[in-house]
Image 1 (cartoon, rainbow, N blue to C red):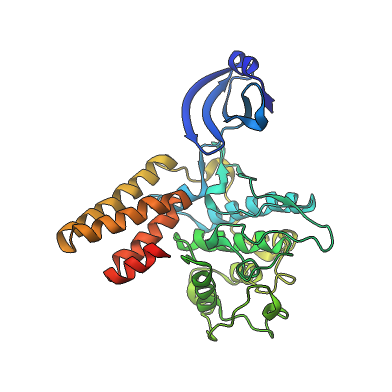
Image 2: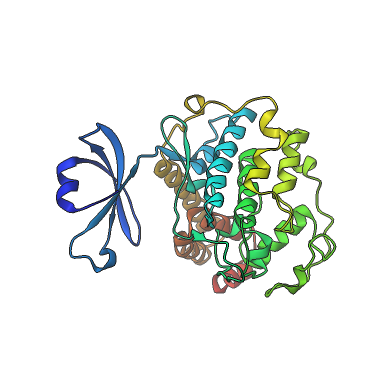
Length: 346
Protein backbone atom coordinates (compact mmCIF):
# COMPACT_ATOMS: atom_id res chain seq x y z
CA UNK A 1 0.00 0.00 0.00
CA UNK A 2 1.39 3.43 -1.00
CA UNK A 3 0.58 6.46 1.15
CA UNK A 4 1.07 10.18 0.89
CA UNK A 5 2.82 12.03 3.72
CA UNK A 6 -0.34 13.41 5.39
CA UNK A 7 -2.06 10.03 5.52
CA UNK A 8 1.08 8.34 6.80
CA UNK A 9 1.62 10.84 9.59
CA UNK A 10 -2.01 10.66 10.68
CA UNK A 11 -2.44 6.89 10.64
CA UNK A 12 1.00 5.60 11.63
CA UNK A 13 3.07 6.14 14.77
CA UNK A 14 6.78 5.82 14.11
CA UNK A 15 8.45 3.55 16.67
CA UNK A 16 11.98 2.82 15.52
CA UNK A 17 14.49 3.24 12.70
CA UNK A 18 15.19 -0.10 11.01
CA UNK A 19 17.63 0.69 8.24
CA UNK A 20 18.54 2.72 5.19
CA UNK A 21 19.48 1.77 1.64
CA UNK A 22 20.28 3.60 -1.56
CA UNK A 23 16.64 4.17 -2.46
CA UNK A 24 14.70 4.02 0.79
CA UNK A 25 14.65 4.41 4.57
CA UNK A 26 12.73 1.85 6.63
CA UNK A 27 10.96 2.43 9.94
CA UNK A 28 9.06 0.28 12.39
CA UNK A 29 5.64 1.79 13.09
CA UNK A 30 2.24 1.12 14.64
CA UNK A 31 -0.88 1.27 12.51
CA UNK A 32 -3.27 3.19 14.78
CA UNK A 33 -6.28 2.03 12.76
CA UNK A 34 -5.64 -1.70 13.15
CA UNK A 35 -3.27 -1.58 16.16
CA UNK A 36 -0.71 -3.71 14.34
CA UNK A 37 3.03 -3.31 13.88
CA UNK A 38 4.14 -2.56 10.33
CA UNK A 39 7.27 -1.62 8.41
CA UNK A 40 7.20 1.64 6.44
CA UNK A 41 9.62 2.04 3.55
CA UNK A 42 10.04 5.71 2.71
CA UNK A 43 11.23 6.01 -0.89
CA UNK A 44 13.89 8.62 -1.46
CA UNK A 45 12.95 11.05 -4.26
CA UNK A 46 10.85 8.37 -5.93
CA UNK A 47 10.03 8.97 -9.58
CA UNK A 48 10.70 12.71 -9.22
CA UNK A 49 7.43 12.96 -7.26
CA UNK A 50 6.66 16.28 -5.59
CA UNK A 51 6.22 14.64 -2.19
CA UNK A 52 7.74 11.60 -0.54
CA UNK A 53 6.11 8.21 -1.12
CA UNK A 54 6.01 5.50 1.51
CA UNK A 55 5.15 1.81 1.20
CA UNK A 56 3.65 -0.11 4.12
CA UNK A 57 4.57 -3.77 4.63
CA UNK A 58 3.97 -6.49 7.19
CA UNK A 59 6.56 -6.19 9.95
CA UNK A 60 8.84 -9.23 9.90
CA UNK A 61 10.83 -9.96 13.03
CA UNK A 62 13.82 -11.68 11.53
CA UNK A 63 15.18 -13.54 8.51
CA UNK A 64 16.48 -17.02 7.80
CA UNK A 65 20.12 -15.91 7.74
CA UNK A 66 19.85 -14.85 11.39
CA UNK A 67 18.25 -18.18 12.31
CA UNK A 68 21.02 -20.13 10.56
CA UNK A 69 23.83 -18.11 12.13
CA UNK A 70 22.42 -18.11 15.68
CA UNK A 71 24.39 -21.05 17.03
CA UNK A 72 22.38 -21.02 20.26
CA UNK A 73 19.43 -22.36 18.25
CA UNK A 74 19.00 -26.04 17.42
CA UNK A 75 17.43 -26.62 14.00
CA UNK A 76 15.60 -29.93 14.03
CA UNK A 77 14.71 -31.85 10.85
CA UNK A 78 11.11 -30.71 11.35
CA UNK A 79 12.23 -27.05 11.58
CA UNK A 80 14.25 -27.32 8.38
CA UNK A 81 11.33 -28.99 6.60
CA UNK A 82 9.03 -26.13 7.64
CA UNK A 83 11.36 -23.43 6.30
CA UNK A 84 11.88 -25.16 2.95
CA UNK A 85 8.19 -26.03 2.61
CA UNK A 86 7.16 -22.37 3.02
CA UNK A 87 9.93 -21.23 0.67
CA UNK A 88 8.80 -23.63 -2.05
CA UNK A 89 5.13 -22.76 -1.58
CA UNK A 90 5.89 -19.07 -2.05
CA UNK A 91 8.09 -19.83 -5.03
CA UNK A 92 5.47 -22.09 -6.61
CA UNK A 93 2.97 -19.22 -6.42
CA UNK A 94 5.43 -16.84 -8.09
CA UNK A 95 6.34 -19.26 -10.87
CA UNK A 96 2.69 -20.09 -11.58
CA UNK A 97 2.22 -16.35 -12.11
CA UNK A 98 5.25 -16.22 -14.43
CA UNK A 99 7.59 -14.33 -12.12
CA UNK A 100 11.21 -15.26 -11.33
CA UNK A 101 12.61 -14.01 -8.03
CA UNK A 102 16.28 -14.12 -9.13
CA UNK A 103 17.76 -13.25 -5.73
CA UNK A 104 16.81 -16.00 -3.31
CA UNK A 105 19.10 -16.26 -0.29
CA UNK A 106 18.56 -16.68 3.46
CA UNK A 107 18.33 -12.98 4.32
CA UNK A 108 15.64 -12.49 1.68
CA UNK A 109 13.44 -15.05 3.44
CA UNK A 110 11.73 -13.12 6.22
CA UNK A 111 9.92 -14.54 9.27
CA UNK A 112 7.22 -12.91 11.37
CA UNK A 113 6.38 -13.48 15.03
CA UNK A 114 4.13 -16.42 14.14
CA UNK A 115 6.87 -18.21 12.21
CA UNK A 116 5.37 -17.43 8.81
CA UNK A 117 8.08 -17.21 6.14
CA UNK A 118 7.69 -14.75 3.26
CA UNK A 119 9.82 -14.12 0.19
CA UNK A 120 11.21 -10.58 0.10
CA UNK A 121 13.35 -8.19 -1.96
CA UNK A 122 11.91 -8.30 -5.45
CA UNK A 123 14.42 -5.82 -6.83
CA UNK A 124 15.70 -8.38 -9.37
CA UNK A 125 12.37 -10.14 -9.97
CA UNK A 126 11.31 -10.50 -13.60
CA UNK A 127 8.35 -11.81 -15.56
CA UNK A 128 9.22 -14.70 -17.85
CA UNK A 129 7.65 -16.98 -20.41
CA UNK A 130 8.05 -15.01 -23.63
CA UNK A 131 9.78 -17.18 -26.26
CA UNK A 132 13.31 -16.17 -27.29
CA UNK A 133 13.44 -13.45 -24.64
CA UNK A 134 16.94 -12.81 -23.30
CA UNK A 135 17.71 -11.70 -19.73
CA UNK A 136 20.80 -10.51 -17.92
CA UNK A 137 22.86 -13.28 -16.32
CA UNK A 138 24.17 -10.94 -13.62
CA UNK A 139 21.48 -11.88 -11.11
CA UNK A 140 21.32 -13.89 -7.89
CA UNK A 141 23.93 -13.46 -5.17
CA UNK A 142 26.97 -15.49 -6.27
CA UNK A 143 26.83 -18.20 -3.59
CA UNK A 144 23.28 -19.06 -4.69
CA UNK A 145 23.82 -18.59 -8.44
CA UNK A 146 23.11 -21.53 -10.73
CA UNK A 147 25.73 -22.96 -13.12
CA UNK A 148 23.87 -21.73 -16.22
CA UNK A 149 24.02 -18.14 -14.94
CA UNK A 150 27.71 -18.51 -14.10
CA UNK A 151 28.29 -19.70 -17.67
CA UNK A 152 26.53 -16.58 -18.96
CA UNK A 153 23.14 -17.96 -20.03
CA UNK A 154 20.80 -15.18 -21.20
CA UNK A 155 17.78 -17.42 -21.65
CA UNK A 156 16.70 -19.22 -18.49
CA UNK A 157 13.69 -20.02 -16.35
CA UNK A 158 12.59 -21.27 -12.95
CA UNK A 159 15.75 -23.37 -12.60
CA UNK A 160 17.74 -20.35 -11.40
CA UNK A 161 15.44 -20.01 -8.38
CA UNK A 162 15.39 -23.75 -7.73
CA UNK A 163 19.19 -24.00 -7.61
CA UNK A 164 19.15 -21.22 -5.02
CA UNK A 165 16.64 -23.19 -2.94
CA UNK A 166 19.06 -26.13 -2.99
CA UNK A 167 21.84 -23.88 -1.68
CA UNK A 168 19.55 -22.54 1.07
CA UNK A 169 18.52 -26.06 2.09
CA UNK A 170 22.17 -27.11 2.21
CA UNK A 171 22.97 -24.07 4.36
CA UNK A 172 20.19 -24.98 6.80
CA UNK A 173 21.70 -28.45 7.14
CA UNK A 174 25.34 -27.36 7.43
CA UNK A 175 24.79 -24.01 9.22
CA UNK A 176 27.34 -22.41 6.87
CA UNK A 177 27.10 -21.44 3.18
CA UNK A 178 27.52 -24.59 1.10
CA UNK A 179 29.21 -23.13 -1.98
CA UNK A 180 31.02 -19.89 -1.11
CA UNK A 181 33.11 -18.76 -4.08
CA UNK A 182 34.81 -15.36 -4.24
CA UNK A 183 34.57 -15.00 -8.04
CA UNK A 184 32.40 -16.54 -10.76
CA UNK A 185 35.23 -18.87 -11.75
CA UNK A 186 35.86 -19.86 -8.13
CA UNK A 187 32.12 -20.40 -7.66
CA UNK A 188 32.01 -22.86 -10.55
CA UNK A 189 35.10 -24.60 -9.16
CA UNK A 190 33.42 -24.95 -5.75
CA UNK A 191 30.29 -26.38 -7.41
CA UNK A 192 32.18 -28.91 -9.52
CA UNK A 193 34.50 -29.94 -6.67
CA UNK A 194 31.47 -30.71 -4.52
CA UNK A 195 29.06 -32.14 -7.09
CA UNK A 196 31.31 -33.30 -9.92
CA UNK A 197 32.14 -31.49 -13.15
CA UNK A 198 29.33 -30.87 -15.62
CA UNK A 199 29.87 -32.45 -19.03
CA UNK A 200 27.94 -32.71 -22.30
CA UNK A 201 26.79 -36.14 -21.11
CA UNK A 202 25.28 -34.82 -17.87
CA UNK A 203 24.22 -31.46 -19.27
CA UNK A 204 23.68 -31.41 -23.05
CA UNK A 205 24.47 -28.01 -24.54
CA UNK A 206 26.59 -26.73 -21.65
CA UNK A 207 29.62 -26.16 -23.89
CA UNK A 208 27.56 -23.83 -26.10
CA UNK A 209 26.79 -21.34 -23.31
CA UNK A 210 28.25 -17.84 -23.89
CA UNK A 211 30.85 -17.88 -21.10
CA UNK A 212 31.59 -21.59 -21.02
CA UNK A 213 35.09 -22.66 -20.04
CA UNK A 214 36.26 -26.24 -19.63
CA UNK A 215 37.14 -27.49 -16.16
CA UNK A 216 39.22 -30.26 -14.74
CA UNK A 217 37.05 -33.34 -14.26
CA UNK A 218 36.23 -33.54 -10.56
CA UNK A 219 34.50 -36.74 -9.41
CA UNK A 220 32.46 -34.89 -6.80
CA UNK A 221 31.43 -36.13 -3.38
CA UNK A 222 28.27 -38.21 -2.87
CA UNK A 223 25.59 -36.08 -1.23
CA UNK A 224 25.17 -38.65 1.55
CA UNK A 225 28.77 -37.97 2.57
CA UNK A 226 28.29 -34.19 2.59
CA UNK A 227 24.93 -34.32 4.40
CA UNK A 228 25.56 -37.34 6.57
CA UNK A 229 22.49 -36.81 8.77
CA UNK A 230 20.07 -36.57 5.83
CA UNK A 231 17.68 -39.40 5.05
CA UNK A 232 17.11 -40.84 1.60
CA UNK A 233 14.06 -38.64 0.97
CA UNK A 234 15.97 -35.46 1.77
CA UNK A 235 18.93 -36.56 -0.36
CA UNK A 236 16.51 -37.17 -3.24
CA UNK A 237 15.21 -33.60 -2.88
CA UNK A 238 18.75 -32.18 -2.81
CA UNK A 239 19.70 -34.20 -5.88
CA UNK A 240 16.72 -32.81 -7.77
CA UNK A 241 17.62 -29.23 -6.84
CA UNK A 242 21.32 -29.64 -7.66
CA UNK A 243 20.74 -31.10 -11.13
CA UNK A 244 23.09 -29.33 -13.55
CA UNK A 245 20.74 -29.40 -16.55
CA UNK A 246 18.16 -26.68 -15.79
CA UNK A 247 15.58 -28.32 -18.05
CA UNK A 248 15.51 -31.41 -15.81
CA UNK A 249 16.08 -29.63 -12.48
CA UNK A 250 13.06 -29.96 -10.19
CA UNK A 251 10.42 -27.25 -10.32
CA UNK A 252 8.78 -25.99 -7.12
CA UNK A 253 5.68 -28.06 -7.87
CA UNK A 254 7.74 -31.21 -8.45
CA UNK A 255 9.75 -30.62 -5.28
CA UNK A 256 6.60 -30.17 -3.17
CA UNK A 257 5.29 -33.55 -4.39
CA UNK A 258 8.39 -35.42 -3.24
CA UNK A 259 8.18 -37.93 -0.40
CA UNK A 260 10.32 -35.73 1.85
CA UNK A 261 7.33 -33.49 2.58
CA UNK A 262 4.85 -36.32 3.22
CA UNK A 263 7.19 -38.44 5.33
CA UNK A 264 7.69 -37.98 9.06
CA UNK A 265 8.55 -35.81 10.81
CA UNK A 266 5.98 -33.28 9.69
CA UNK A 267 7.00 -29.62 9.42
CA UNK A 268 7.09 -27.69 12.68
CA UNK A 269 4.04 -25.39 13.04
CA UNK A 270 5.01 -21.74 12.59
CA UNK A 271 4.46 -20.57 16.20
CA UNK A 272 6.71 -23.39 17.44
CA UNK A 273 9.66 -22.56 15.18
CA UNK A 274 12.77 -21.25 16.99
CA UNK A 275 13.15 -17.52 17.41
CA UNK A 276 16.55 -15.83 17.44
CA UNK A 277 18.08 -14.65 20.70
CA UNK A 278 19.35 -11.44 19.08
CA UNK A 279 18.37 -9.14 16.23
CA UNK A 280 19.82 -9.32 12.74
CA UNK A 281 21.66 -6.06 13.35
CA UNK A 282 23.13 -7.30 16.65
CA UNK A 283 24.26 -10.60 15.12
CA UNK A 284 25.92 -8.92 12.13
CA UNK A 285 27.56 -6.31 14.33
CA UNK A 286 28.94 -9.10 16.53
CA UNK A 287 30.40 -10.80 13.45
CA UNK A 288 31.89 -7.53 12.23
CA UNK A 289 33.51 -6.83 15.60
CA UNK A 290 34.95 -10.36 15.71
CA UNK A 291 36.54 -9.99 12.29
CA UNK A 292 37.92 -6.55 13.10
CA UNK A 293 39.56 -7.99 16.21
CA UNK A 294 41.20 -10.70 14.10
CA UNK A 295 42.45 -8.05 11.71
CA UNK A 296 43.76 -5.87 14.54
CA UNK A 297 45.58 -8.90 15.93
CA UNK A 298 47.71 -8.95 12.81
CA UNK A 299 49.43 -5.76 13.95
CA UNK A 300 51.28 -7.82 16.54
CA UNK A 301 52.00 -10.94 14.52
CA UNK A 302 52.22 -9.65 10.94
CA UNK A 303 52.78 -5.91 11.14
CA UNK A 304 50.71 -2.75 10.84
CA UNK A 305 50.88 -2.49 7.02
CA UNK A 306 49.40 -5.93 6.48
CA UNK A 307 46.64 -5.28 9.03
CA UNK A 308 45.69 -2.02 7.32
CA UNK A 309 45.63 -3.75 3.93
CA UNK A 310 43.15 -6.38 5.08
CA UNK A 311 41.03 -3.81 6.94
CA UNK A 312 40.82 -1.74 3.73
CA UNK A 313 39.59 -4.81 1.84
CA UNK A 314 36.99 -5.53 4.53
CA UNK A 315 35.60 -2.00 4.39
CA UNK A 316 35.55 -2.06 0.58
CA UNK A 317 33.71 -5.37 0.33
CA UNK A 318 31.05 -4.63 2.96
CA UNK A 319 28.81 -2.99 0.36
CA UNK A 320 28.59 -6.38 -1.39
CA UNK A 321 27.20 -7.91 1.79
CA UNK A 322 28.71 -8.71 5.15
CA UNK A 323 28.94 -12.43 4.38
CA UNK A 324 30.95 -11.73 1.23
CA UNK A 325 33.29 -9.38 3.12
CA UNK A 326 33.77 -11.94 5.87
CA UNK A 327 34.67 -14.73 3.43
CA UNK A 328 37.16 -12.42 1.73
CA UNK A 329 38.86 -11.54 5.03
CA UNK A 330 39.01 -15.14 6.23
CA UNK A 331 40.78 -16.12 3.00
CA UNK A 332 43.24 -13.26 3.47
CA UNK A 333 43.94 -14.18 7.07
CA UNK A 334 45.03 -17.62 5.89
CA UNK A 335 47.37 -16.67 3.05
CA UNK A 336 50.57 -14.73 2.40
CA UNK A 337 50.98 -10.96 1.92
CA UNK A 338 51.66 -11.22 -1.82
CA UNK A 339 48.39 -13.10 -2.32
CA UNK A 340 46.62 -10.42 -0.28
CA UNK A 341 47.91 -7.73 -2.61
CA UNK A 342 46.66 -9.71 -5.61
CA UNK A 343 43.22 -10.03 -3.99
CA UNK A 344 43.10 -6.28 -3.42
CA UNK A 345 43.62 -5.68 -7.13
CA UNK A 346 41.06 -8.33 -8.19
